[in-house]
Length: 529
Image: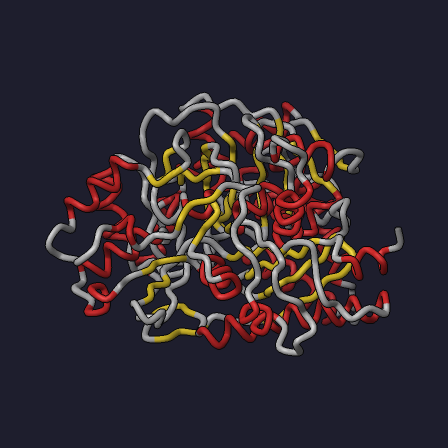
C-alpha cells in the first residue's frame, strides 16, 4: 500500500518528544519507518531563579512541532493529515509540575536542570536507603515542604512534562513506568510505587501536608497498556486548524530515558545504551538489584518495568566542540574555510594516531557542575606535566577520552564493583557521527562491544512513535522485547566494535590519572571565581 493511502487510513503512529532545546514530532508507518517529521525550537527561561518553561511555551511548542510535521506530510504526499493510528508523548525526564483542585499550575515548572532539591534528595536517600537525585520529582516536593513553600498545601496532582501534555490531550492522569521511576521509586515486582517507601515518606511529612503522597502522583502504566484517547478538546489543542479528528488512542507517556532505550533496542537484561551529546548518560538493564545505593547511579526502569542502572553526567561534548571551533577559527585566519563536518572528522581521526593513554595529558570537560565526580561548578581544564607527550593527536584523544571520563567513573562501579554483566551497548548521539572513533573509545572505556545503528540518529521521538505503534499493533501477549526484535530492528544495519585490549589498557591508565587529578578541578572551583 502506498504511503499516501496509509496516512489517509490512519495506519500510522505519531511520537512527539520535548527535548531541552527542540520539540520533535515523528510520524511512522506500520513498519516503524519514519515517513514525516517536524520540529519546534524552544529555550528554557530563568523565572525567579528557576530554570523553567511556561505553559504557553509548552502548548505553542506542541502545536508548532505538530504543524511542522503535518506540513511535511502535505508537501511529501499531498495529504491533509486528519488522523493517525496512535500517539505517544515524551519529554525530558522528571522535574516538578504541581496543580491545585482547579487544575491551576501552582508554581512555575521546575525542570531537571535545577539543582535546588539536592538537600532533600540526600535526606531521602538516607531515609529510603535508595539514591534519590536532586532532579527527581519527589526530591522537589520534599524540598518545597522543607522550605515551607505556601503552595504545597494546595497540591492535588503532581506530574512531569510529558504527563502534563498527555493529561491535556486525554484528560488522563497517568505516566509510563520508566518516567514514574524518576518521580518516586518503583517496585520492579509490583510495577507500582514502592509501598514501603511511600509509608516512610508519609510518616516523614506527617502533619506538614494535608495529603498522602500516593494520592497526588499519576497512575503508573507499562508499555502496551491503554492510556486513554485524544479528546475533542485535546484534538483542538494539538491541531488548532481543526483538521485532526479526536478519539485517537494514546500509549503511556514516557521520559527521554525510556524512549532512548526503545530507539536503540536496549531493553533486554545485560544490554544498555549510551547517549552522548551535550550531556551523556549510560543505561544498563540489570539482572538484579545493586548491593547498596550509590550517589553516582540512579535506579530507574525500562518502559516495561525492568530495573536499570543509570549514570547521568552533565558534561560531554560542549568543551570538545569549543576546541574544534577554535581550530576552525585558526584555519580561517589562514584563509581556509573548512566545513564543520570535515573539521570534526579530521581532528577525530588524527586522535587515533595518539598514544593509547593520551601521552600523560589530562582534561576535564566540566562546562557545568558534575555530580558524579563531586565538582560543584563548571571549570573546563587542560593540564599536563612538562614531560607529557604533547602533540595534536594526544590533545584530541585526551578531550575525546574526557568526554567519557565522568561516565566511566559511574560505569566502573556497576561493571567492576557490582559485577554487572553487559553483553552489548548501543551508542547514539552527536559524538558518534564520525565513523568509528567515539565508538571505539567508548568500547575501551567500558570494556564491552559498542554498536552504532543507522536508526539511532532518529532519536527519542522515533522511540515514542514505536511505543505508540506497539500499543495498537502488538500481537496477543507479545512482549515489547519481541516486538522490537521482530517488527522494528530485524534486518537493521549496524556496526559493532569490540574493545581493543590495547585501547582498554590505555583508557584504564587515563582513567586512573583522571580520578587522581580531580582535586585540581575542585581547587579551580574555589580559586577561579
